[in-house]
Image 1 (tube, rainbow, N blue to C red):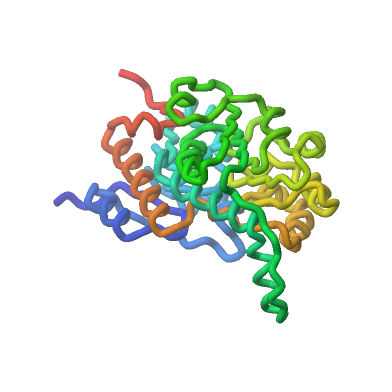
Image 2 (cartoon, one colour):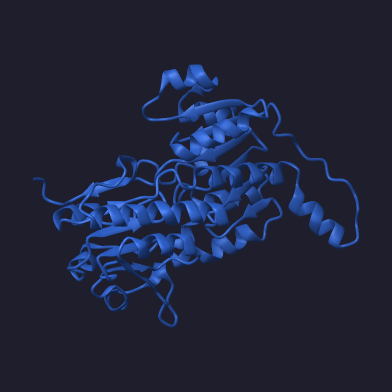
Length: 335
């Protein structure tokens, strides 16, 4: 067997042994990076990245910010393989200009994130957090909740996760409204969903779930003006990207009782430390169910995304093209 010569650095936690074994069997020297003192992957500076990635041809990455400067400082790097599906932290134009490949782990975490959204919907509707705290305090008073069954659910953005959510919601006999840039009428006929505009979702939905990418057009799609259009007592869920919701506006609406609650896996404070007091205030509310950007983080979900990310790395290092749905940009010169 040839020696392992192709250095692949993993800067994500929870990288499983099966994926490590696959990379090693594919002639890769796998390095599970240890973060420098005081750093997380998301806060790595250029010097730390250069030290960790020196000589690496493949980088399996989560939330590090990958700028043109970073890519230029890593001349051996051929592929940035995101263990996830977002890529707003990667300078795509720079990757194309510098001849690099950027991939995502498409299809690996759809079910996992959709499961989390359903869990948050039920937890908020049935007031699990409040009931648990009340019982801990010694009171067994019954708190009336609300069903997910046969409610109207609005989904903004119908990618893989949105479609996985539709599958699950059908079991609750919900009325599903979807806002999507390019509506697929055939999909609507097969599933019974109804394509509408965002304003219709805001007016009619009991549960609003965000599954759009973060772009200038979608930033703060949920803000005070949007909340004012929503049903009193409606629920908002953001398990997509911090910034889709104006967290300060959401906090005000929850405090004033204009919304029934919020399920949040992502926060503006992830990219803007000045927003941390707002995040802390949201977490303190009894009608907020939260997670630390962990929607994709189950053993099974991470095993799937680890393997897809690894397969993308091996394909590029072997001179092949990764699965089409995983390729964000391929800057390699064409023959």
